[in-house]
Amino acid sequence: AQSVTQPDIHITVSEGASLELRCNYSYGATPYLFWYVQSPGQGLQLLLKYFSGDTLVQGIKGFEAEFKRSQSSFNLRKPSVHWSDAAEYFCAVGAQTGANNLFFGTGTRLTVIP
Amino acid sequence: EAQVTQNPRYLITVTGKKLTVTCSQNMNHEYMSWYRQDPGLGLRQIYYSMNVEVTDKGDVPEGYKVSRKEKRNFPLILESPSPNQTSLYFCASRKALTGNTEAFFGQGTRLTVV
Image (tube, rainbow over all chains, first blue to last red; front, side, top):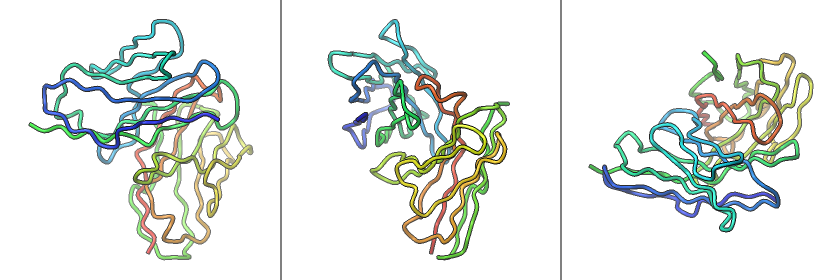
């Protein structure tokens, strides 16, 4: 069965520091991978996605993520965090088959301190 | 502007009083779904619909109903709400069922059942 693990429930970083949010998935075939951000009081917005090709993908707001098949990971990174990046971040896996085929992790809440 | 619109954004109700949360998308998407978001549990799918008049249960369907009479609308119905349905609800739509299509989310409905 497919699953997504985000091991960090809450991360605090200083403004200007680098950021890495972890995501591990379990899926038997090549997954489709997504990162979403949920700002306070808002819905989820797509940051970036990986389907195939270059394993380093760029997204909006200066984020990037790297797909590592050997580690079943799709970690999200940003070199310099801004206060406006404070939000909750969700990793998701899309399966190739099945009617219920988009699975979300439990989320990582990011706090940014001045 | 492409969007998913949910109403209301906030709702406080009493146990047993039927309510409906509306969801509408203007992107002509085939696939729509409802999620609930609870702390530590991430997003869990309640129901989904692959097209008009085609709906199916997600992971946590108990206590909920849905209908899909038109392609753009996918209301969530709580016939007899209970306090354990207090949650943040999101409607989402996708262009197709394939796992490599991103989901577009509404802004959420925060429901409190007292």
